[in-house]
Image 1 (cartoon, rainbow, N blue to C red):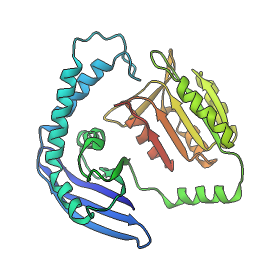
Image 2: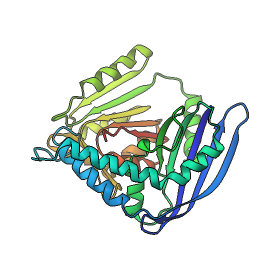
Image 3: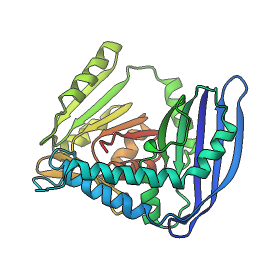
Length: 305
C-alpha cells in the first residue's frame, strides 16, 4: 500500500517547541482513506547547533571532492569525528520526533508493508532560520517508520496551483511528441559527470530526445528554449545562499548563474511544457526553492549529503 504522510509545521521554533503540527496520512488503495492528527513537539535547542557542527565538519572533509564552490581547503578533521557528530544528531532527532513516531505506530498497522512518502511542509514557519533547519535536517535518517516500510522524503515549498496542473494536462492531451531532455553539464572540476551523461544517453533507446551542453556560456542557454522541453537536468557544482532562498549553479570554471537572473527564461520553458528539473549537485535547497516559486510541477535536487 502507498501512504503519503504530510507533516506540516504551522508555527514555532526549536527554542520554544512546535505546538501546532498537523499530521495527515493518506492511504492510496482500493478504499482511499485519510487520517488527520495534531501533534506537539517539545523544545529541542540542541538540534540547530548539532546540525551546524556536523555540516561544517562534513563540508571540511568533503572539500575538494564535493559538488561545491570552495576548494583546496586544508583540514585535519577525521571521518571518525564527523561520524560521531552525525550519530549524535541522529540520536537527538529521533528523541525529539518520538511523539510523531508513536502516533504513526498507532495508525499504521504493524503487518503492513508500505511505500511511504514523507512530505515536510514548513512554509508557515515565520523564522527563515528555523525553516532552513527544518528543510536541511536528515529526515531520511530518522526512525519514524517500521523496518518493513520503504520510505522517501520530499520537501513541500508551496501548494501546486491548479492552473499550472491544467496547463500540463492540456499540453499532454493536445501534443504528442518524443520526450525531450536538456542536460547541462556544468563546471566539473574534481567531479565526474560522465556517468550522468551515460545514463541519460541510455534513455535514447526508450525514445527520448537528448540535448547536451557541456560547460556552456550564458548565451548558449537562451537557445535551449526555442522548442518545447520536458526535463531539465543539471550536473556540476552548485550552492545555496541566504538560508536556502538563493540557488546558484556553476556553468563553467569561470562563470556561475543565480537562477534569479533568468526567471522569464524558466517561466517560458515551463509554459512550453517543462515538467521536471533534476539537479545532481551539492547544496541544492536554494535551487528547489527558486523553481517552486516559478510553479514548476516537479523538481528534484539530488544531494550528496
